[in-house]
Length: 304
Image (cartoon, rainbow, N blue to C red; front, side, top):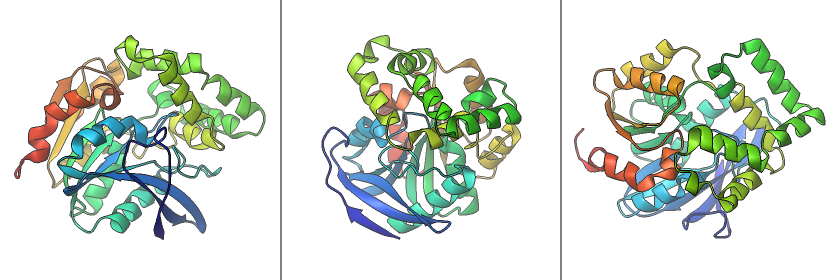
């Protein structure tokens, strides 16, 4: 495993040093792209899983954190600028990746900020290796993919996943579900709350992310629940109850009802700090300055 410096353009980075981490999984090497900005104590910034997942969604938050932290933001394997091979994307891949990446890049306990579906993976690693993180901040955390949340059985979700993975019909179905009009609809429905921010140029950038070679494989895994690291609310809450490091959760006041119920159950646990701010599942991208203001006491204090 090694890291290399990359040259890139301002259109696909947020102003930091862009590097690649060459990661081996099951005898296959994957190229994982990450970006570092700022100086200070280390902070790992993880974007959410989605069809449009990229480190750019946490780029503005990274810039706001950079005066106080050395921020490392990463494109998950299968997303963003990282390799997108036709793997059977499943939790084991991301569990192992996160463990290996943290071990390779950092040599001290770090602050981790994870959006959306990254929550379960962070919590699992924190329970497995308590010295990995010094504090954990979860932004609109989720643990169940879109189709299971809508009530689809594992059998139905699996059929959809295999269909999207198929060469011809799968490509056509994926294109329909990543059209600019569909992406705009989804952002308005449960990602952003301010429609004025969902501009044609914004959606075009998101669409471009979805059209990279191999993009449909990890996306289909997420949508159908194959990246769900836990499958029951009790398992998710159990991870939190096993934590030995400080935890804070940021909730968007306009989160979808089912997601909001799950977040409410999480923050009802003893010892979990929480705050509700404007926004929905994309609050880290839509309101980064509000996020920072709401969590700065947690992030900057010596004790929590």
